[in-house]
Image 1 (cartoon, rainbow, N blue to C red):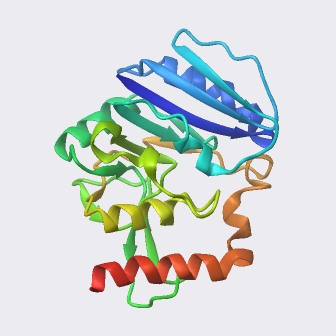
Image 2: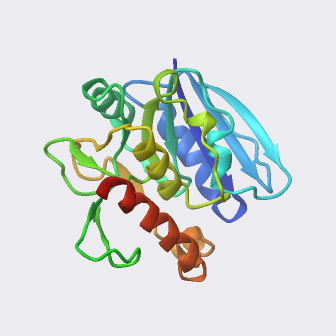
Length: 224
């Protein structure tokens, strides 16, 4: 069974039906979509089954890991519109790396150990010819087999910054991470100000201490 998990915030409500439409048009369709409304609600149209979670307030990105399916799970951020071949390409990547956590967005490490300057993006809108091993991935374009990884049992210390917390979990449990091969723009990133006005990444500098602690923990695991 293939399940797509989307957590959506009020300021991105204008995107959610577009994402649902794109999922309904996939060359390989998911069996179920879980939409987690964070502080608002909207009626949605879908031929694919949609399960709704209605949170009266924004409980953070952690909610995406609270309603997982038992088998194949994909997380899609509410500022990405998946291309028609998104799920098919993701499934093919997971088949090549069945015991791994995979994503269309990865990060390469750079020499410095500073969180803000120690990573280089492998972004979804550039071609990637081969799967690339990473130690950190973007959860917002991810896929994995929950029956093998058990991410629903991750002890999240913070409601946001899931990328670093999942990376630490995978490192501790020797779960490999791969940025999977894809053609450019496997997903369209919605970068308009309306969509990005309250994005989590804009608050990173205010959480520098936490993020640096995560960063140090992750790198220490791989150095030991």
